[in-house]
Figure 1 (cartoon, rainbow, N blue to C red):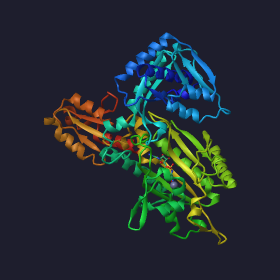
Figure 2: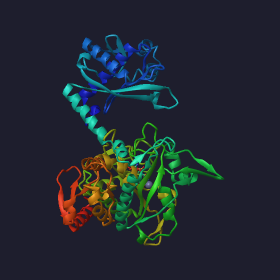
Figure 3: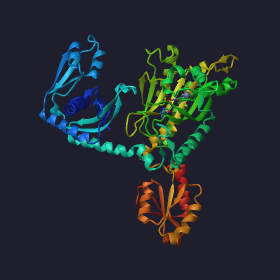
Figure 4: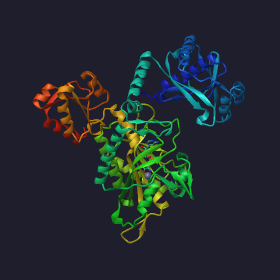
Length: 582
Ligand code: TSB
Ligand code: ZN
C-alpha cells in the first residue's frame, strides 16, 4: 500500500486536504478549535476541539459534502510569512495554536500561515496552489485523541482522510484498504476462534482460545526442537522480580516507563517483568563456568508484561502481556561473530519453513550524541557494531542501518515486517550486550586461569508467540499449513445413515491428527462451505462409492477438485505434508 508521507506530491496534496477538512469543520461548527493536522503514512488527520460535540458516523458525509463545496469554489491557497506577534494576535482566540506559536523561536523558524477563502491556518506548508486541486478525497475514520497524546489532557476529535489526484487512484486505494481489513489478524482471529479479549481481563491482554492454543503449542514444539538441536538449555523462571533486580540490570533507570508499576508484598517490592534477561543472568551466575563451557544458551518461553499505551495495543500484535521465544547466549568475545551468525541463520531457516518473504533486516545502532540512553564506551560500541555488520555482509544479506534504535545495552539486528494495517513492527531480534554481564558480575575462567566477563546475545526468533501468530495469520490470510492448523481434517459423510460408521472408523485411524467429523443434519453443500469458512485444509467426503471401495475422497481448501485414494495413500500423503511443513 502506498505510503503518502514518502511521496512529495501526495504529501502536499494530503496536507492541503487536512486544511480543507478544517475549513469545512469551521463552517459547520464555528466554535471549533484546531490543534494539528499532519500528513501520515495513511493520508492525513486533523485533531479538533469541538467542545462537547463527539463526531459520529452521520457527521462524516456532511463534512465531506462541505469539503466538496469549498473545493468547487476553487479559492487559491495563499502563503504569508508573519511575525510572532502577528501570529499571536491572529490566533488569539485559539489556545491550541497559541501553544504552538509560544514554542516557536522567531530567529530560528519562519512563521507562516496559509489562507484559502475565509480560512487561515498556521502552517509550515507546502501546499497545493488552489483548493480546486482537492477533488478526489475521502474521510476514512474518526476517533478521540488526547491533546498532545496525554490522557490527562482534553480529548479532541481526530478525523482521518486521504486524497489522490484521480478517482481511479482513490478507488484503488480504498479497495486495498478493504482487502487489508479482511487480512487483519484481529478479524481472522475472531472468525477462526483463535483469541478473544475481555474488559474484565484488561486492555492488551488477549485470551488464547483452544484453536489459538493449538497453534501456539505447535509453534513452541517447533522452535523448542530447533533450539535443542542447537544446544540451547531451556528454563522456567517467575514472571515477577524485585525492583532491586531491575535496578541491578538497569531496566529500572532505562525502561521504567515501559513497565507496570511495582507492588509491595510483605517486605519485598515486585514488578511484573518486562524482560527475562535479569533472570537468565542469575541462572548463568548459579554455576562456575570454564571458557570451554561457552557458549551457554539459556532459553525460555517467558511471559512478560509491558506498559504499552492504550491506543497502541492491537490484537495479538502489540499486547501488554506477551510470551517471548527468548534466549540469552553467553559467549566469549571471540565467539560473538560465530554465535551471531548462527542466530541469523536460524532466523533465515525459520522464515524459510514458514514461507515468510516480506521482511527487512534493520541493523540498529546507537546515536553517538545520546549519552543519556547509551552507556559511554565508544570503543566497545564501535567494535560491537562492526562485528554485526561484518556477519551480515559475509552472509550477503540486504539490510539497512538505523541510528538511535539500539537497545541501551548494545547494537542489534531486528527483522521488520509490515502488518495488514498500521506501521511496521519488529518480529525477530538479536541484540548484543556488553553491559548486563558486568552489572550482574558474571564471569568465566579463561584458559590462563583468569576471570573474564562473558558477552551476552539476547535473541528472540519469533519475537513473541503473540506477534508471530498475528503476523502469520495475516501472511496466510488464515490459511495455515497443515501442521499448524487447529483442525486439520474434516470428515463429512454424504449420508449419516449409511456412511457414518465408515467415517467414525476413519477418524479413529487418524489419531495423530486433529480431525472433526461433521455428522450434523445439514446439507452436504452447507457442510462443505462451513469447512472452507473454518479454513480446514483437508475435507474428506465419504459416500457409497468410498464405502464400497474402501477408499477416501478429499478436497483441499480453496480447490474444487476431488481426489480419490486408498486409505494407505491418504496416510502417506498426510505424513508427507507434515514432514515438509506444507
Ligand atoms: C530478546 N531482552 C530481549 C530479549 O532477550 C528483549 O526483550 N527484546 S525486545 O524488547 O526487542 O522484545 C523481543 C521481541 O518481543 C520483539 O522483537 C518483538 O517481536 C516482541 N514484542 C515486543 N513488544 C511486544 C508487544 N507489546 N506485543 C507483542 N510482541 C512484542
Ligand atoms: Zn534479553
